[in-house]
Image (cartoon, rainbow, N blue to C red; front, side, top):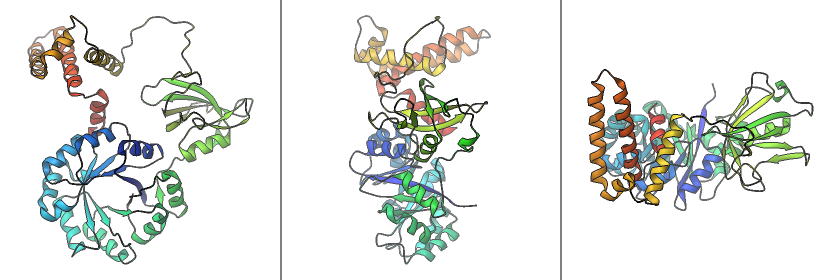
Length: 412
């Protein structure tokens, strides 16, 4: 079975949140962020806008730093110089947060006994090794192989030039590739180069050929495009075989324009690209459902969705839990930004954090009391009161439902 290589662009300086988002869109398997003294605030800013794992490191000195970075949204932390001072931090961090979240970096050119060091890191609880060699890996191929065998840990190799990726992979036998490039590079193009060289990489590949689909009378496949988070239908368009294959190759929605009679990559003119999250064919194989991340608006009129003109509508209760929570939260945030006289929510904000915490505690206690009652109706009311006050607390601290759901997904 071929090795699956993860391509991980690493960001240092500049505008890390913007760079991370761009790499997320371009097909990165994860993104790395490094700073001389990394802060939880920057990690949080990066993590909130990406859907791929975030690896973070730099200036992490103790277990409290590890906790702050992981709690801010990093999926893994990378421990470097601090391990040379206190190796036990690896064990403490691995025991506390799980070894899968701990990477230890090692400079092959400076480490006195790399093999023994790697073996010890594995024993202490590291989950992965990041190997560095500024002058190149030409003399370290056999050493890297020995490190992998002795430690049993997956190895990530750091490079600075994406053009060297295939050669380094062939030389070093790495499991993952960290690309520390000052210039932005095309991740999907690099992955295709790796695949051509025989390395397994995670690219978009359709489980069915376009020839298996049932096309309309014009020889095209109907495509329904949907927001991947909200499930809102954005637009309906058409694909030829060439458009479908380009979509799969690039990860960006490409259609066929019937009016212009040419391929049309959504966003090339407006910048409102649609980045593929999934492509699903229906039971008749004649309609494709594309779930995408939409940048800007899908409709040429400036509307987010092309479906904004109501023809027939019956009032109904929207009881989607997340939409209800988000709606209530949005009202609370609006009260915070635009105070309204007589608003209980504004009263809580004016009294401050201690009052809000007191109410959250009181409502939690009310749930416990109500739960002892055989009639669950009272419990329903108390839970609703608690959730409202909890959302006021979230708003006061600047926390969103996206952050909470992301954390729950990670735990699942």
